[in-house]
Image (tube, rainbow over all chains, first blue to last red; front, side, top):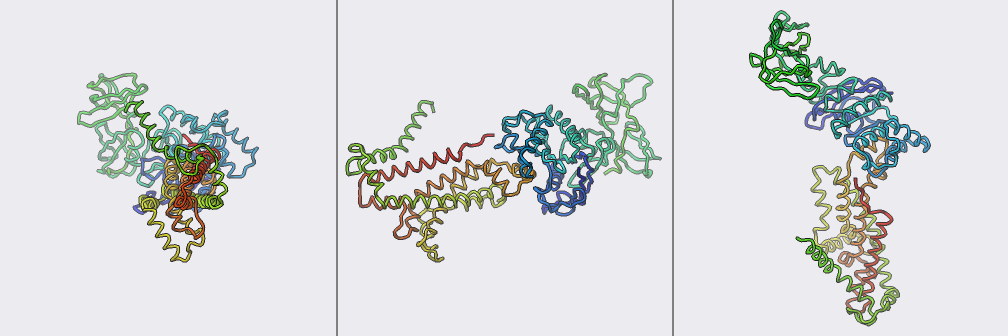
Length: 347
Length: 260
């Protein structure tokens, strides 16, 4: 197992840095995701770790050894590409054997290791097939097996699920995560899909404009986003602005006490996740802010409401469909004060 | 266009294209002393004359040898150029393409005369085959380039990257991944190069050494003074030879296009 340490990594193609001095330490056996919109530098970062792109500045260390000047083929990485990049003129077996042959592994051992890895990805019996004879999900698993069979130092995945349909994508998330845990390999996973990053990763690196916006466990990123950009990129969010008076922010959804060093009169932005808000029917004796239901979207396990407060503020709420409210109906909105998360001063 | 009409249309086109060849083949079996069609009686007489004609046999050997050398050189340079063109030329892509196709755009006779001046001005001259082969390579290069770049367009660079991530160096990546996948284009291009080189007249005529000649030149020379069916026999043999090259390459090397 390998610890990967990235220090002040920068890539500049000549028109401003695509990756701008990022540093992150990936622990042995950790599953880390690089998450961000397209053009944020996540793929460039992955390519630099793999060696397909030269770093303009900075260091990439595998177990303390700087590999910046080591060519891809000597870096001992396993990589899974977005379109799998299986060799179309080779059977599954030949595809899997390729990396082992490059390492001059004896024939008998190659056979054993291929059998083992095929079992691991549940494709025993598919050795003689050509990639074009496999489904997307199967090709995906062959690509994983090909990357893992060489027992590389680290596993790199570049949006590997982007080409699969929604149901298969969810299955593969679990499959890859379980496999990674079993093998215990240090893994870097690039995605623009926040749900993928959250469900699979030990830690998520959120990137914007070539810089790291936040590094943290999925729950940190979601519940305690570092800034407005992160909050909005990772799931839905209601943004509430207000002024701090005596460590309390008055918002249309009630007063929120804020802890920390906020001066009186400071403008502050609060994030409130839609599922943190409760909706209650208007009955006597129940506390809450009245709001009108503008629209609702039923998606089976959940319902998304769009509400309007008396002062015109729009609030998005997500609830279980146990109690349904009709469009136009007035409801009471209850947002627990401890579910607001301060995002710092108004940008 | 209705289907029966289209079929007839195709047949007529084929007939138009192939009739002259059939006439030549037919005329070669002439028993008489003149090149006529329909042949006057059937015989292999003129084949016998041809095979015993040392001048023609030497010309065929020269042509085959030049075509083989040309194919190898053109195949290597054209393939390298096509790979560069598709994967690395970037903004220069259009310029590279035009430069590679230039020999096709210029009249062959101009290329031939320029080359003749060139080989003498650099002191190479026409005493060796060098000038002639350079000329043949120049003319055949675009055909290799076009065929290989067509194959390269459907080559996914991620295949090379995947091989590299698995530990394959530059040469191994080419030999085990890229070459097998662009093989139909390379072989197709080389076949073109071979057949066209075998057929080139103008360049060979300008750049040949005194005393050596290729088959097309020899045939032309012969027809100036003779009008026997031997010329048809020679032509038929070169048609058969060309077909043999195509069929053998297909069987041995595999022109089968990989479908994904």
